[in-house]
Image 1 (cartoon, rainbow, N blue to C red):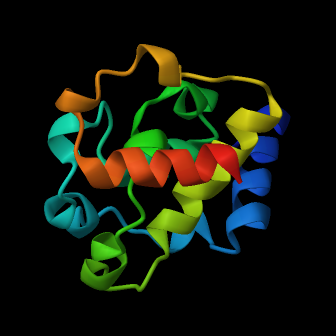
Image 2 (image 1 turned 180 degrees about the vertical axis):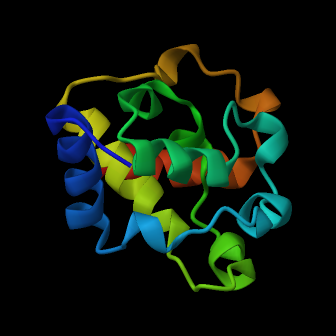
Length: 127
């Protein structure tokens, strides 16, 4: 696979921030099968990793990294032991560094969201 320079930059940033090798994922889909929040996500966790592998910057606009509660069920299910929450966190960090903010806390309707997602998101946003 030939990645251009901007694709390599995104891949490199994610791998540097997460400490994970994105190409160790072979797309078995077990992370997505075990995730309790896939109904709320626009991309499945394995699709996020695939976009990172491809250097696809559209992953920075996805809602999935922000919905991820870092519950570690994906890591437990992964036959390779990939730390998917670390990759999600790296994507969030890159998005925040680019001042891309999808969530406006004042406009959230808390009744539509799982409580763990609210707590997790507030912890991520308020450092």
